[in-house]
Structures are given as C-alpha cells and as structure tokens.
Image (cartoon, rainbow, N blue to C red; front, side, top):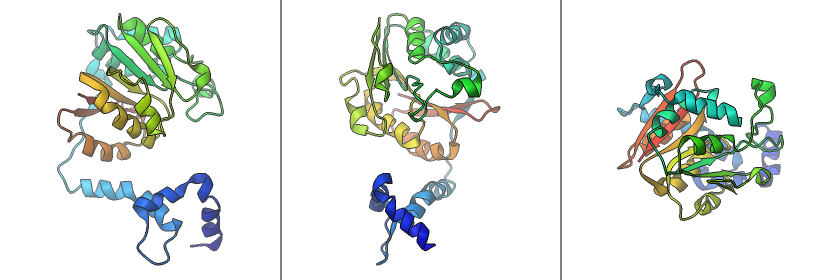
Length: 264
C-alpha cells in the first residue's frame, strides 16, 4: 500500500473512528493495520451475497401497482396538501392500501424532512433537484388526517423542526445512536412505522432492531428509499427467517427505488 495512503488513514482514524472496525475485521497477522480493516469491511457484503447464492433464498419483490386501491388519491392529495414528497414515488398506493381500513392506531415516522443544508439527508436541495418545496412534518399531518383518531409520532435529528399539535408528538433522535432509538417514545408500541431518515443502512438496521419488539401484531415496519438493493438482500436473508415476521420489497422498475416492509 502507498505510504501516503497509510499515513492518511492513521491521521484520520480518530475523526472517522475507524478503529471500531478492528473488532470485526482485524487481521491475525503481526503487522495488522487499518488497511486490512477497511478491506474487510468493504468486502463483507459482496462475500455474504456469494454465500447466500449457495442457498435457495429469493427475496419477495412486488410492484406498487399490486396495491392500487380506491383510497390512494385521497392520501396522495393529503401528501401534496401538506408538502410531502411521498406523492412523487408511488408510496401512497401501498400506504393507502394498508391504512384505509385502520383507525385509532399508533403511527411513527423517523425522518421529518429537515431543510437544514448542513444536515445529512436534508431536503434543502429538493427544490433544485425535483422542483418541489417540501415542508417538515408534512407526512405526519397527512397520516393523521387519513387515519382517523390515530396518534402520530415523529422523530428527527434536527431539533429546530420538532413540534406538537393535535394528535402529533415529535422528538429528537439520532439513528446512528441505538440507545437514542431505544428511548424514543419509550412505552409506546406501534401499528405502522416508516423509517425515512438518514437513508444509511446502519441507521436503518439500528431502527429495525430497536423497533421490531415494539411493533404490535399485524403491524408494518417500512424502510423507504432503498437504492442499494444488494445490501438489503443480506439483511432480508436474516430478518425473513424470524418467526412471526414476513418481509417483502416493493419497487417500480422505472427508478429502482424500493420500500422494504416487515409485517408482524
């Protein structure tokens, strides 16, 4: 390895905190160093996919059009009314199919749509990219209006967009800190939960692990905006084997954007 690269890795170790990689990816050789840890971490998903290929595993994949229903336009219009981008992808078809028969349930959404340009996964650039000016907390209001009598909970890392109004409560959470997820609305169990925050596999899996035992029977736990499908095939290979849990991916061939749904 180039000496400069080696020095740069060591120089940035504290800032990036890559020393944590050594727990799972260290070399048993006497000259172990961060290069091996990074190589190990980078190869892990591809290696797991090759292992999975030896099995008969095949993920369940459905289309948004499979969930077309008489209530989808109602929810779509609520997303538009309040300033949510959930009408741009056909998520509203699936959500309205699941929720149209529900009332008086507990709904959670992590990721309220910060527009702070200094925060990861910000909606700040959405106007430039999509020509759409979103409003933080918009989908919480849409879910509240669509599912009558429900208690809606929202969470985001941006404290400046937190609010409380009729049937809606919000709180701060960092999805990379599992301890914060475990404390989020502690004591409340959920019937429908949407993870639409950092859009990073570690944050999303942290959220699943924290919430899965707080989901009621018959509930849905949904991860939005999955782009790197291979990562989630590895996750699904494990989660689909949990007794009492079924899993599926929902997509549209046009953009390759997936929802990942766990049903309890």
